[in-house]
Amino acid sequence: MTLLRDEDLAAAFDHASRSYDALVAANPGYHAHLRRSVRRLGLPGRGDGLRVLDLGCGTGASTAAIRTVLPAAGITAVDASAGMLARAADKPWADGVRFVHTPAEQLADAGVDGPFDAVFAAYLFRNVSDPDAVLRTVRTVLRPRGRLGVHEYSLSGRRADRAVWTLVCRGIVQPAATLLGDGPLYRHLWHSVVHFDRADRFADRIGRAGFDRVRALPLPGWQTGITHTFVASRAQDPR
Ligand SMILES: C[S@@+](CC[C@H](N)C(=O)[O-])C[C@H]1O[C@@H](n2cnc3c(N)ncnc32)[C@H](O)[C@@H]1O
Image (tube, rainbow, N blue to C red; front, side):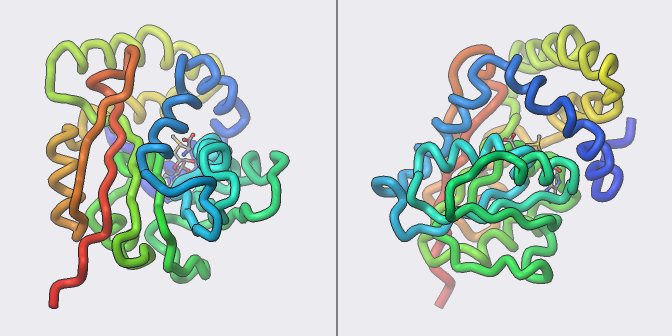
């Protein structure tokens, strides 16, 4: 099976946008885990005066997590799927949230300029064709010592964790998604996770892209060993 990429992936998310919120609502802890990952950024207080970029915001679940944890921060939320983004933008947001339709690879062309104090990317990186290039782009829009938070399905390497992932996908997610006409996207979901970096390797990848203080932190419940928060800081430029 070929993984979905770029325009094909955006089209699949456009279609899935109708049912996305209902599907994630059935995933125990989805929203609480996003908030936990945002808290792990370690940003001060309510986020007064801070600028946060939500990369791959989808229908706004990650944007809402940032908003809840950092209610005073300004948020720029971007996504490559017009359908997902329209769902996000239709929700009621307080001032200080803006949505931009652009792939993560083309932030500058879309007028999304740094410096940001933090970049948060939930369930984005295993979907991009070139994660190293996106990490480099993220680094350029972060202020020096700015924070990166990646919330991602990235397996631990234990066979049991992969088996749980397969069970959840084949037994629950794919049958529901097929009924909704989104079978290809959710088959992509299973493949994209098993083909993505293991957690230790993704942490190394982040480090090689010019970040330090990289940590891979587990999430609780059935997602332990399957979903991680990766946190890191933009390293100083070499002199
Ligand atoms: C699984 S959804 C997650 C959405 C949201 N962050 C959340 O936590 O619910 C992944 C999102 O990433 C977007 N995406 C995938 N590849 C992208 C890219 N190269 N640039 C920007 N967005 C992308 C998709 O359109 C989709 O909305």
